[in-house]
Image (cartoon, rainbow over all chains, first blue to last red):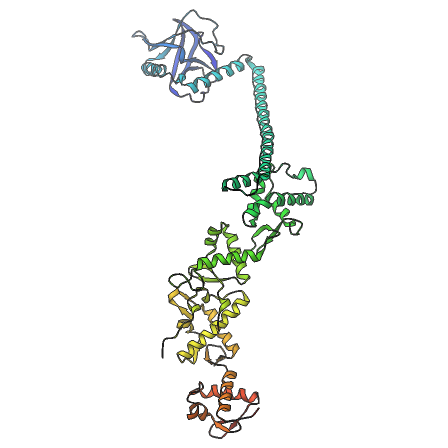
Length: 401
Length: 177
């Protein structure tokens, strides 16, 4: 009977209840004990006995069960017994209600109706040895040890309850502070990462600029846009307008290279994503980004905010040359359209915004704005039909009347 | 009468969309007007109904499955009227008379012919100009009377001719200038 230990009446993670029934009495060896009229549960790893008046249960690890025997009572009795032969108490086990016992077997008094099923289930659970699967063993042990700590000082009465609550609170606050400790460490590590990336980026910059492989270029651009050492924060700056000014400087410095790489124009939405990625943990709101960009209208900044007639807002290089942009797009249109005399079948082919986007690697909205820009500059012609809006190079410039 | 030779831009899809760039639009409209006039002249069409205009072959090209939208046809016709190549015959602008050449252009041609055939300072009847033996090789041969009268009135306003009512029809006296 010394193998029983006190435990919470809840299942451990992964533990599965196999069978449960009422248990008339527990026996220590062949002797009756005071544990009567309880509820018995057979799980995949334990035997649990609980009296309805008590929150806690008595647990018995199935790993120490050697043999399960059925012992039916006399024909006059209404029940039978299950005999469990046990090995010695495992080393790490919480305290139980019995200190020592001379017997190496216990008995469970059950009703006749439950007897055979319970025996079968017990035998199955004992032979399955679920507790031997590696991950499970750790779990059981850890739970056992923690319940050991909790149970030792536990006393009955209000004091016991209060202590339990106190202990719980302590544990909670401890785990919270541990969690925050983790976050702090993450932040310091992130800073180190950013520093590392910067040093790599600087080294790459120092090397010869004629990058041979695309990968090198891409790697470099990734690194360059990876992080900002010291992100501007609202707390650090104070006034909102000053904050936006600083943020504008930060954006234009950080994203200049990226904007140049994507062709000189970047949608405001992408600016928002990129700046937040570069800042890492100190995220900024879309509103702040928009406000900061709205300051970027003078030539003081390498990037300028530009609003298309459609309302689409972009950041573009201050040095961006509309003429080159238009002539480049027109060349592309002419190539696609088939030249002045049309394609092989004598027909001309138009280019839609979607097609231009795919060919030039632009977002759809920017592709459309670029075509409209060409139209405005007299380099492209629109063609509205059932096939949608398409654009052709302006061949009207050679119209003869 | 041979097949009408369509210009290249008749097969150029964006030709059938009125352009929004004002400069491009101007040259586009010019091409449209030229095309409509040449086409009308080739097929000897003198009036255009706005209601049925979109079924005219000049305004739609099934080969490239494009046709000029009705409102754009209206713009082209108005442009023609502005240039003097089309005159609305009613106030609601549902029907227009096509002038292959404007009254002024006709006037020039008539005056040049008059100079070439030494008709200056003499009086000619309308019949002589449009049906007479001496003008059979001229473009205005067979021109309707009201167009001719418009041309002559134009000459009069320039001081190159004087329109005279001879009683049984109009006549004209070409003046030296």
